[in-house]
Image (cartoon, rainbow, N blue to C red; front, side, top):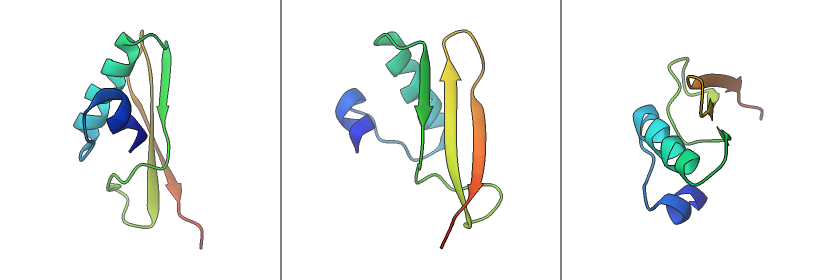
Length: 68
């Protein structure tokens, strides 16, 4: 919800997330990290997806096992 308020864009796919991170970079921050997204993990529904990006490097995807 916060990203939608900042950018006016919803995130439904990893590609959407990359576009939103690019928009956030244009707003100023060199590093952007999206945590606890609702994105589906390619490792199954027992994993949370987090994404990170820096202006000068590629996007890093992280997958965390869900607890509880």
